[in-house]
Length: 383
Image (cartoon, rainbow, N blue to C red; front, side, top):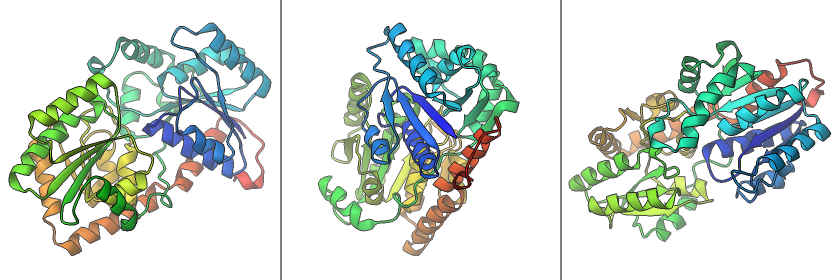
């Protein structure tokens, strides 16, 4: 099968990392895979190139570089004629169906990675493109959503149910695995002693991730115990970043809180944590960070947003969104567990991810969803 992915960039992000994982698996199984990006230079581009997956930049020069960008995209598709053009996220999805009249033999597949977004928290472009995506969804040949919450939301907004399939994210359980030794240098870098408990939130600095809820819960917990530290791993727009920094200072968290920025050594980061948290208040589909932390044997506390509760189940704790008090109490409950009970959760968390969300499951479900679109020639290695 010849598959081309289309995405804005390969910067750090959950959708981008899932595209990389899926493209590498499809390539490993013998499919012809290429990734088209609007803008080059993203740090994840190297991961694909090392795996032998071609990455082609369409060299978009900015928002208003439309005609030249479209010309380069059309020329690529005319030359390569993939069986599948798989968009990832809103702009790429819209482009696939706009190109459909020119390429009726190419099956256009959408990748939807969010659920119930609060568009009042985002810019005008996002508020305008989402209704367009909803109206054009009926022209997609297949819509792959990474969460049940996202599927329900999309269908409620007019996406065709008969074309929509849920395929949860896949976690690389060989890369993300328990390795306490790898976490020690990270803890040392952050100035933590062996006795201090580290609670982490991994995710871009974005209103969806509800960092203020995390910070307010942290301020409550440090009133009860002084052996805790908190880390936020991820980056975001400068103005929002400064707003969060100011909130951390206002809550008197300066000596308890680490702003780590974006990092490449994520397996080591997870292994440095005692607890991982997803405090999102809206918009999540399948948060990669929850699956990755669990694969590393780190107990998770998550808000009941998107499929977070579905992923964690009985292997962690689920609290309502935008409720710092309950988030703090869940942290306290897990930190106060007897060590043997804590270990039981760590082992069960990893096994749950291995059993249900490994990369082989991602590959098989995606391959079948694409294969169902049309008769395609596949060799025995692809099956």
